[in-house]
Image (cartoon, rainbow, N blue to C red):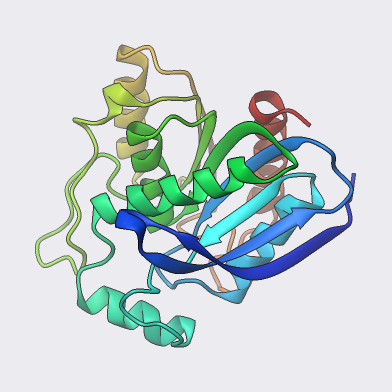
Length: 247
């Protein structure tokens, strides 16, 4: 079902009360519904990820995407902001959790909220979606090919990032994982490891893997885009959120 929607750039209170830019898309014909925090990929707070937020609103969910780079590059283009963030080693984990917590609070304050909030992230945001779900009380989380949820970054890697193995026992909600079998980070072996760890800790999860798909297979504006994998992935996401967020 396609809903009418409204999308706006807003300001929300993130980590330590910092005011940061965010993009909010909401259905205008839903009385009560679930909400989703959209965590953008490393290329940043860009038009393609805003379109993802609007797609969720068209499916009946309020979707809010914090600009994780607002502090380091306010008003910059998404490319320039991403370059600045990379040069600084990326977004610190504590800051990410604080920004997502602020987004969750904002979504729950909406008059249309049913009180249920999920996260989703792509690429670096996939790892950050899991990170948020390990440190906040969420109702569902989606990891789209997030690198270094398990595994070790290669020597000289440009981001200051560690794996989340020690945090996975705290995962607060069911996790949907969507991965390409041609990806290197995460590799199929790393996806197997994540599956094993979550199973050992009794954490509900559902993984789907796609042949002839590598990293960023959802990215319609990149050569990595894979139509069949992306279309199936969208169906899985909508079904998953329907189960855990309602609607």
